[in-house]
Amino acid sequence: MERQIGRIKAYQIRWILVIAAVMILTIGILIFWTAGDKADKGMTERVKTQVLISARSQAFSIAEFFKDKQVDLLLLAESEPVKTMEEKEGRKVLKVYVDNLYQKSGNVVDVVRVDKSGVIVWNINIKENREGEGALIADREYFIWAKEQKEPGEVFISKPVIARGGLFKGNWAVATATPVFYQGTFNGIVFVSFLVEDLTKKYITPVALSLETSSLIIAQDGTIVASNESGLVGRNAIELAQQKEWKGREEMTLLLKSSLEGKEKVVVHPCFRFGGFDNPKKAISSYSPIRVNGNLWSMWISVPYEGAIKFAWPIKLGQAQGFALGAIGGLILVLIFVFGVRIAQRDAFVDGFRDGRDGVKKLKKKS
Image 1 (cartoon, one colour):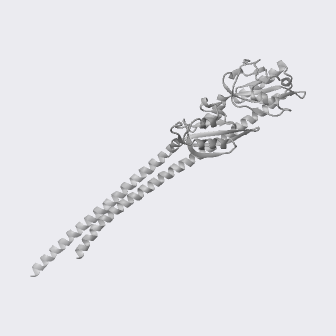
Image 2: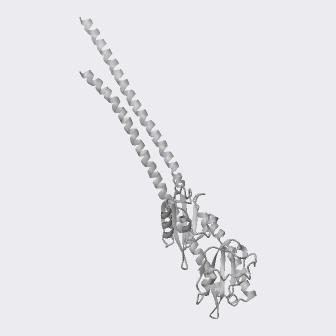
């Protein structure tokens, strides 16, 4: 009976070991899956933080850039030769400003003096390209705004427009304009044009976290001011998002409208910029407000979610290697234990057999 119990216990031990091995493997898989999920979430939060910081810092840089140029523009408008449109001295004042700006910051601009009827009288730049002088721009939004002003001191920042002259003719440009008053009467405007491509290189390209990064500056009415995708400049971001039915359309529209209300946010959402309208992919997007002299723009940075998660692969690979080594180590220990038990049983059987045999021999000698 005792031997049978011993056999049952040995039989049970083998099953206990098998069950224990399966449990260890299952727990290991659960731990590995949980660790992988945490790595994905951790990397997502890390990228979200990075994208938000980038959007916020670039929004601040753009605002400071235009604030500085606003001060310069107001000083130019108060220069006596510029106010009176004295040909020689007025051109000289603007040329000195253009040259100094280029030497200090590398910024290439057109500085333009327009008379009260909307005709360009001077177009000043580093290459002394006067193309466009004599052109009528009375239809420009910034000229119409300037004519409505009652006193000097205000600055208008335009949406992207196609330049009609100067260095940027035929290209997208953003203008900062201010009215000029002489003896209390409106006497035209002065404006400075900045090439959108240059703004993109300075403020959009540097924030690219990857080749797939989509970066935009959007004006309050939805007009795209600058983008690392040149074909988007001048188009309306909200209209782009709504031009087709697609999964995530309403969410994207709400996010765009929220950004144009001066709000700041970082979010994971479906985005037609990655995958198209038929198969929109998840994106991590951040937007931050740009406030300059009453203008409200928004800085957008978006990266594909899948691309962001790829950064977690080395971590997950290390976890997989660690899990594999742990599983192999655990299996080896189980095998050593199983074989150890079997060897111990064998040794115990051999020792018992020898003891029994020796006992029999001793009994025979006595008899």
